[in-house]
Amino acid sequence: MTISPPPTVPFVDLTWQHAPLQEAIQGVISAVIAQGDFVLGQALSTFEADFAAACGARFGVGVGCGTDAIALGLVACGIAPGDEVILPANTFVATLMGVLRAGAVPVFVDCDRATALMDLDAAERAITPRTRAILPVHLYGQMVSPQALLELADRHRLIVFEDAAQAHLAQRDGYTAGSIGLGAAFSFYPSKNLGALGDGGMFVTQDQLVARTARSLRNYGATSKYCHTEPMGTNSRLDTLQAAVLNVKLPHLPSWNQARHHLAQHYDRRLAPLTEYGIIPMRNDAGSGHIYHLYVVRVAGPTSRTEIQAQLTAAGVQTGIHYPIPCHLQPAFRSLGYAPGHFPQAEALSQEVLSLPMYPGMTLEQVDYVVDAMVETVAAVRLERVLPGVMG
Ligand SMILES: *Cc1c(COP(=O)(O)O)cnc(C)c1O
Image (cartoon, rainbow, N blue to C red; front, side, top):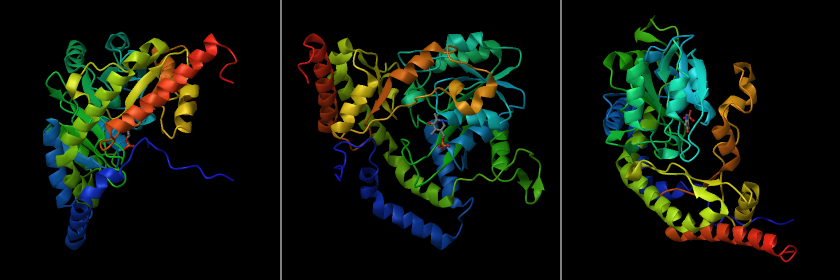
């Protein structure tokens, strides 16, 4: 029996983030325990105000997770059963689940192969008289063009609802993620750019009435104690303990995002020569505002993604695939009536994308190690093709 050694480069490392904050985190946890306001407590109000302000939104409503932020947020924005909501096919399945839980009809659209972001021309073509909202996903940490979104929404009188679960403090053209739409959803799942010590999420909005409805929805649909006015109400609140921890982390978020950006630029530089081998980093159209929740390349042949991923694993480099099955082809949602071929770009991306290690605290040497391992793989495959048999 062999015991595999620990990976040389993990996909994500959170110990790096927590070690220097350990004492501060323990301090705020003790304070919450002493205060005893575990549900809807003071640290939650503080975090809601500070995080919303950081996003350029007026109100923040802490909920149990990002999926709930989408589901409750859409309902709070006035999305009603039967309303059509346009969303990209290539997103994490939670985007879809949020739409379905709001009772809305999901209408998928394809994406731009180079950025993996929603194709807004396709979105415009998908609009029907029943369309109420467009739900862009700021995938991998890059915002969908705010200007283009707002123009589209304006032309057709649509609500914009942002899935910003991968885009905490991402920016583009002067906008911050969460500030474009009527509503936006964030997740504080531990490995997100801002993560709790467990699940958590937030809905942010510019509208006071929408915020009030969302507050009611997360708290059994109550508007005053034991008076319940929202039938879609549920129990989904961000724990005071989690909010207290997030209060400690929030001031560090800009520098963590910067560190990710710096690493991504190094990846971009080092990977540039591999373009001719079909390894193409996702294009950054947002400049310095891309916060690289994930660093993703397309593996468009001749070396297969499976082969590259296997070689990286052998070299001790953990990788991921975001995502291997687009939403419209997920087995659970066959009844929506979509089939292979409906969204060629999203389907092609699901076969091509490979996420490389990325977290603040990762070193440039680790990036070099990952890239060197990729270079070796493509070089070996190339040699094998030129001189068949030589590589054994
Ligand atoms: C993480 C994520 C969610 C869901 O957030 P949870 O907190 O895990 O419920 C939704 N959409 C996207 C794009 C995500 O990455």
